[in-house]
Length: 275
Length: 275
Image 1 (tube, rainbow over the protein chains, first blue to last red):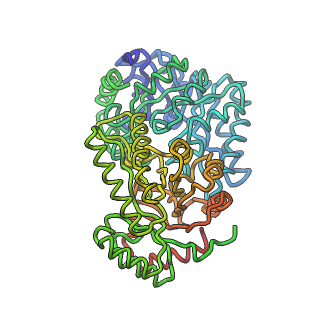
Image 2: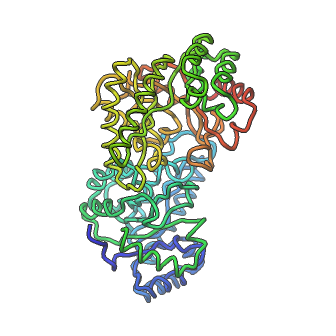
Image 3: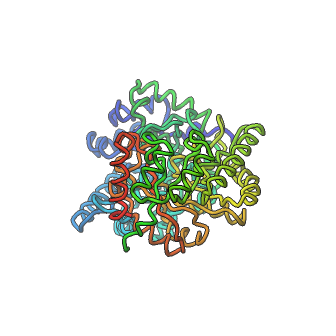
């Protein structure tokens, strides 16, 4: 694989979320000529949506995604309605900042439930319901399949194949976010990426550490783990994807403890060598 | 689901491996009228194979499995040969104690490698090579698909579908061990269990804790987590499985710290209620 295009480097602000506000992240990334960012809703709320929209525009930022909608399964109608209402707000926010997609983390088992089949039905129903609203707003919805180790408490959509089955059923306006951390292990990955084709709405990179000491907050910087990222990027590009390569690292024990300037410099260096 | 038959309760000695030798485990389980056990090779070596065979026979124990063979991928021929030699020894040991199957944990990426596709080819090649020897010895080989979170360092066979694809290619004498901990999250599980049919050589139970604090050593006792074990047992039995239901719990922070008598009593109680 040829090295990735420098202008397609984006950073998900989760990578510096313990250190920087949205304003600091936008200005910090832009100062190093990084023009793609994914935004988190808690940081967006803190900044204010209108202020953020102007900030992003003034810095020439492409908003590669808004994180996140989803979390559909609930134990009762009130819980499902609350999720739906929150997803509508997320669509409004994504539209307001011109996000290329709204990233969906679909949710796991409701409290006390062991019924994965029902949880998955609730996810399909919830996506269908919110998708009408997203289509009207012109906001593409990206289902992010999450690693199977998150199935109980974060997302019961755990393979690209399952996510694409949902997309097939739901029709226009919905696709997938492919995060190497979640899908790198899958023996069907190459085939499913090809199947996804123009439904790939985002491509996220980081690395899988050996050992991994936490199921959620221990992602590695590209090059520090075992994922063959260029190979997967090759599949994604062969499928027709031409968007940003977005670095998203949750790292409680390492990168969140560091000077954010160092984190961003490292992202730039590692991007050229390991993405 | 009706409660599982009491006489089909087996315990994998890993459940009490920090407290009990093989002799203590066999005698401790038998004292509570548990007549199925899976044996680990390090404990078997400590006891001596001939002594163990007699001990197991004298206590009327069915050996539901020997743990474990596998670990095929290596960086060079010497490494692959060493794995093959070790797998032959494992077959001999399984035959000597009359194990119903030899459980295969297939291995992950060799040191320094990021090539999952090559690792999987090495697994297929290694299985094919050792299978000749296992067939001659009359020892059924059980591929155990491991949770995707173990793909890098333990096993690059991570779904029942992948394991069955290998079985299809390899023919007679090889099947699968279905461990709910590894496969419970899989949306294709019901279909793949049906596909497995008479190739299900073992059925292992424990539970998925929320939160899970370690990727390997933090399994839960049945009833303490979110896996709907009776539903999965129903699928396994519908596929024709009539073997033991084997409790296998690695639990550094909890069950390995307890009096093993208490662990076994708890296994018996929870088996009736949650398996």
